Length: 294
Image (cartoon, rainbow, N blue to C red):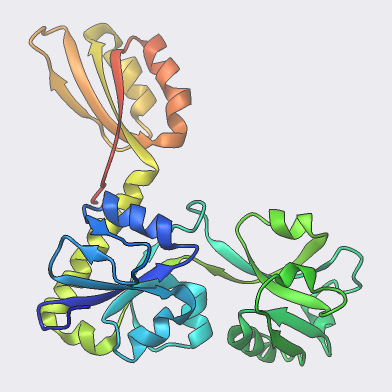
């Protein structure tokens, strides 16, 4: 990985976040070559040197300066108790855009109903440091063991409860576990080393990357709509779009027609297109977006 004043050292998360992170960078305009045998993805941008690192370790390597910046979960920043700069929150995970949660879970028939019932119990988790600090802040004494994986199968024989990561809760339910409480919600964060952040060139480079990543992420949930609207239907069509950002309206060569262009949430498209058609719009075109920069 390159190391010079005009190159930043970027950590990319290896593991569950890897593919979604690479897709996001591609949508942001960065072309990256990744070999299945290499831990050093190559950016088309010569000012970026990168390395694949487990998200669990990222904050530590950014804090101590081995990396100028990196992407990891807020949960792992807290687990490492890392002293870093948070450049941006990027709301994406392995499977979608909702935050992931670390929850206390127990068998369905467990007598543990609340956090205070964990007093004196054994808990298995990968998030050991944060869990210990959280329980201490609540005045709860419990034994917290590191889990190397397959954490859901450990209660009730190997642990009384677990603290486990979940997006939907489906895996926990499949293992006959119920959630007692959420300890922390986490999203992906773009973080920086404090010394690197003081370097003007590196800071500007990292800020530009953050801007493009946020723009690409904002575009994930939005689409553009174009349509032609006759003068007689203009007010009705505009009223359907009034709750959104002001659409762009252009007069056509036929003075009785207008062209309207608007960006809307993708989840509303299937409901609004039939209404626009009924209101008199025609030539409706939906198109994808790469980036939306506020």
